[in-house]
Image (tube, rainbow, N blue to C red):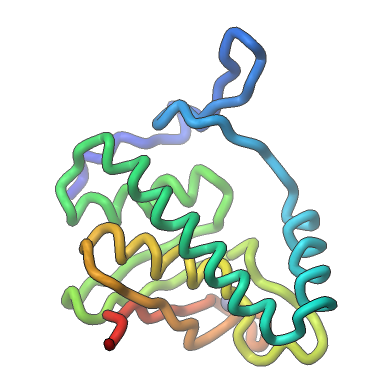
Amino acid sequence: MGTVKFSEDAGLVHRDEKGVLRDNFSDHRVIIFSCSAYRSMCDSLYDQFQSGASIILYKMGEGYGRKLVKGVAKLELPQDELFEAFEKLSHLAGWGKITFKISSEKDIDTIAENSPFILRREGIGPFTCHFLAGVLGGGASEIFRSEYKAQEIRCAAKEAGVCRFRIIPRTK
Ligand SMILES: [Zn+2]
């Protein structure tokens, strides 16, 4: 561990010759949108689909997580450093602080501090970070090249503190 080079100084984005915003690591085009815009998008989903919105958000996160790890994979880091890269990139991207505790490939304890993905809404249930859960599940699936899922087991939306997730293999 410790060879991942992402730092605050490196910055996250630059503009190309056409003025299009791109990230500094994969050169993919990026957009910036606010957390309140994210919550507004989630509100629309919940208004339309009620609890089904949780599944939609999870699936969106899953697709995002897979793509994110594929982008980082171009840096050709060893597997264990991919989790460290994920921690650093997510911090640079404004996701608060995500910490993985990998006791085995079968159970990865994940803590999210100051997460921007918390939703506060009546009737949403005790766990609200479905998008981030999807990112973690999709990301782990890509890192381990096997199907994983992430379950939120504690959410800062309902009790002060951190959000906590378990990333575990998806049973067939
Ligand atoms: Zn949460």
